[in-house]
Amino acid sequence: MNKILKRVLIGAGIFVGVVVLGAGGYVGYVILSYNRIGDCDLKVDSKSELEKVAVGDTYKVLTYNIGFGAYSQDFDFFLDTGYDEEGKETCGHHSTAKSKDEVIFNTNGAISTTLEQNPDFVCFQEVDTDSTRSYHINQDSKIQEKYPAYDHVHAINFHSAFLPYPLYDMHGAVKGGLTTISKYKIQEAKRHEYTVSTGFSKFFDLDRCFSSSVIDVSNGRKLYICNSHMSAYDEGGVIRAKQVEELNAFLKERKDNGDYVVFAGDWNNDLLTNNPDFTYNTTDHRPFGETKKDPDWVSKFFDEEGKSPVIEGFKVVASDNYPTSRNNDIEYIPGKTYTTAIDGFIVSENIEVVSHENIQTKNGNKGLDGFAFSDHDPSLLEFKLL
Image (cartoon, rainbow, N blue to C red):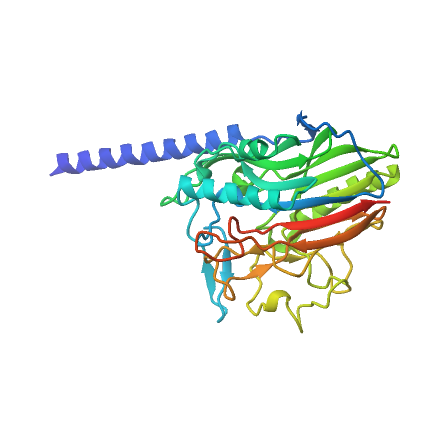
């Protein structure tokens, strides 16, 4: 009996030792593989033969978070929580796309949607190049293939170690970022680092940044097309507030230099509530008839006095004809799934806003219109340089 007990204890000790060593080795792997890219110049794949944009002409820019091709209409995400009509907390389930075919369907659908608008510039977010979650499909290459005469810039903002969680659908390793497409020649492009969390979560979070692409203007000045993806899952909005400060520092420099600026992106902030261009506030009216409680990740870009955190000389441009983002605690069910508008633009005062609208995508995998290929729908801006 003593021999059996001894063997059991030895076996248990070996098992515990292996687990501890394995866990320690994994933590070491995660820490050693972590690095921030920082500010740097970006490679421009130059294919356009159009040298300059002209003052007085109208141009189109579109922003679209394609959700790494995973967010079919029946997809929910394990990190997204929300509330049902009774105020009870809900949570998503999936971590990776349901299949390779769905990634291809969603990626091609998203790109086709942008092509239909005949844009001059497109800013894509959550574009994977080599990730477990999207079956290692290079979505950036697919975008380039469909825009063969456009200049192209890609800024990495997600390059995490393998995440073996959740155990039933491991998120894996991720490599992806922001892709900018321009009908006009990009003279130079840069990556600008945003502040991120300093906690352990940083090892699996995005390496947040925005990119800037510079286009020559006929009057000798510069047009900056910027592509941004601010933090989500930021309790209290502390990190996003720091990111806005960094955004404003860049905007001030551009303003002082007399440049034109169009900042497109996924702001992960509600752009409509308290926005003085609309009548929405949190007490008497909600965008899109929403009655459910805001998910915890939703912050409001405008304060109760209707002031945005962006410096003077720049305007926030958002549209209320249709939502641009859905919560992923449940699949997309019109009228039930929480929706909001967090995608839009910031433009300098030397730019005239001709029109703007959010675009409802069509015929997703459930046969529904809206959020057909991603948990976002695109936003479109027409503008003129003054």
